[in-house]
Length: 68
Image 1 (tube, one colour):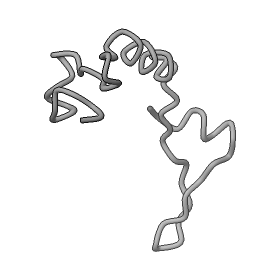
Image 2 (tube, helix red, strand yellow; image 1 turned 30 degrees about the horizontal axis):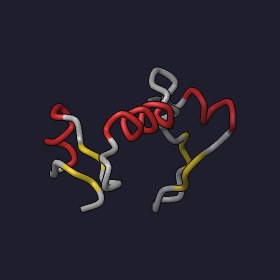
Image 3 (cartoon, rainbow, N blue to C red; image 1 turned 45 degrees about the vertical axis):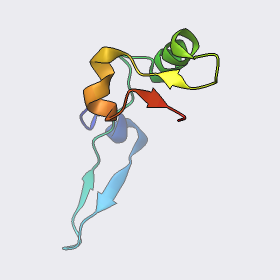
Image 4 (cartoon, helix red, strand yellow; image 1 turned 30 degrees about the vertical axis):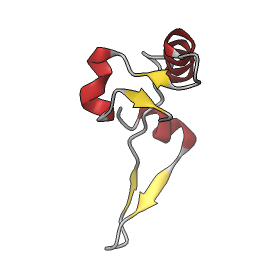
């Protein structure tokens, strides 16, 4: 979550004052986001097609089911 990758890719942002700086990137190297989401969906899909949100994620999602 720093500018390591953007330095290697030379990815910069131009600020309003004209200064250019390297951006901070989130590449999710410690956490395979796509795989985690698929696992949650596969393990929590209900017969009606909705997805039951795991209890620990309800505070972040703001609801208990997705698709209702």
